[in-house]
Image (cartoon, rainbow, N blue to C red; front, side):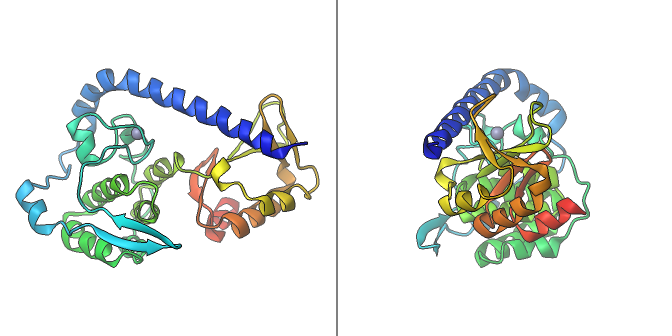
Length: 276
Ligand SMILES: [Zn+2]
């Protein structure tokens, strides 16, 4: 069996359907949902960073290196793409916030978990200038303003390590569902369930993140197999979930995984939490 071909198919199949879904959301939402958003979504404590204030307090963009790659930490600029779904932003409100009207409904208003300012700032520790900026400019304004600012920075720094740090900080501030939404479109792996195989997890891995060493260890687990129907996927018996988690943690630690219970960072803590 040519696994490479299968994964190509899995990837292109999924990518196409995501693009179509994304377009559909954009087309149906831009005209119809922005008004709803303005009426119901925008709370009084929305960030009100005036131009004068932002000129004074926003640090200059910074260059940094991580994993041998050069990045720029963007503090300012126009948010061109939604921090969550990656679709282009079109209205001024969304461009300031860094999140589109549809995505902002995904958990933006939830604050169910206890918040932890210290943990949030620690999540930004790799980027001291960013942590400093948040503490000085947003912490005094409260939790909600910090989250708004983090979403904006995440949008400006999409697909860089800054995005992950901001997402972790949003999570620590209690916006668990919003953090999950922010991680969803850049998840490397997806685990889902299919009705035809109730005793199995189906798994899809982004082609870019596919690891042969992960796959060669996974396929040796009892019951693991690939099928083309009903949809190309790798199936893992649910009884092997601990083995699967161990392999994910050893090969994909720090990347994002989308599950039926939301999108998470792959860590020991994530798996521990899932089992509790
Ligand atoms: Zn979006």
